[in-house]
Length: 130
Image 1 (cartoon, rainbow, N blue to C red):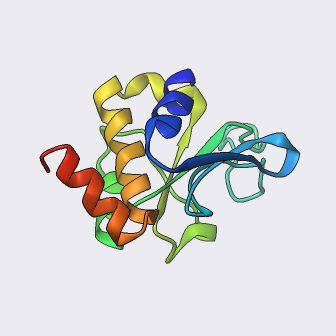
Image 2 (image 1 turned 120 degrees about the horizontal axis):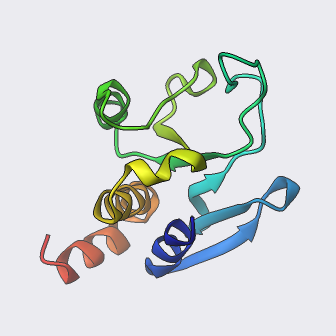
């Protein structure tokens, strides 16, 4: 989990703000790109019916990006009907270990790029030779 926090704060122009119930929200230009979600009735354990209390939301660049991540059974990303039409994917904290550090870095960077201003995104991409 510390990697998520460090990666998000490592992006330029990021502010960490408290969300509801004190869960962190990472913003660029006052636009959220990663946040830790409160337990909600749309994300529950299928065996117990208990609400997941460890869901992280990451913005993505497009619906196609979202579908690619969610459809790939090798990744721990998922979505719920609540997020239909919303350019984001969900990940349980308990499953972060299924991603390599580089995969986690890429999802955080892509989330930042999806929400940063075009000028900031372009500057970051150029600075990283992308």
